[in-house]
Length: 325
Image (tube, rainbow, N blue to C red; front, top):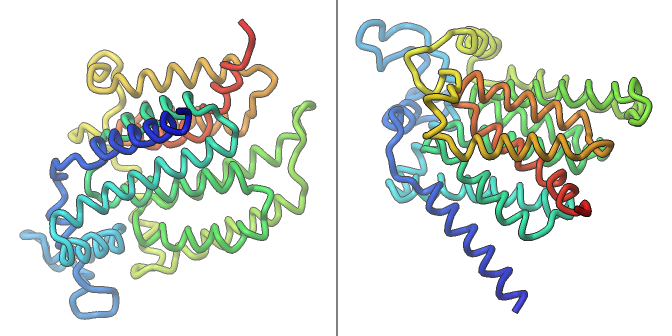
């Protein structure tokens, strides 16, 4: 009977995720994501000028999503609309699977895992359309999983982090999120000795992780545009876009109706962190707080906060649930 309940719970999660991630609403940039990049760098069909512009078709063009767009183009060429929908859904299911695996490794109870995955999937549904951002979501989740469960295995992380960083750099311009995450994690873990109750990482660990980070940064220049990609990323990130709703700050008065799952996720996260007391890990609490601040500053970061919470909060909720009343 217990096995049947477990299978039904797993099936319910899959069905819910299929409903959330297979939303067939077309993204406003879908036509560009399918048609901008139809050939690989070095071939005549790879555009280095903005040939799609009516006013300045010869302007140099830095496409920070070239590999994602080429992938989406190839998937659509081979599988049509159904292929794109399948890819989007599989990326969403992969995200949930990685988070579920993380919860399992932490010993989170099955009922808590069930309800929290439903909440996280619902919150991630905002903006989960066929776009290059989906690759950033999966790579960000992969980095969180590696840092949370394999941070001590520098022999694994030293080669893996730069390779993933190289792929991320060419898939989507938000690769800098991975760099910021590593900087924050390494800094906070190395500084734990400043607090008496927390044991810092060894100097060898810090140097190994800094070496992996340095190689990651170095490999970001391995792209069709070289250092110009960094210039574009800086200029793009600093440019405000008040005319785009997803770039606007989260307004609790006007946005609460559209994002009740985000609000509930924040409240649960706040309650879990507040109640865990001495078991609170300030490295991960800080990363969670930064991701929440990013979501409040720009609504487009709400899925990133949901992913972050999926790796950090369930363990604290599990501890809270185990406390005697």
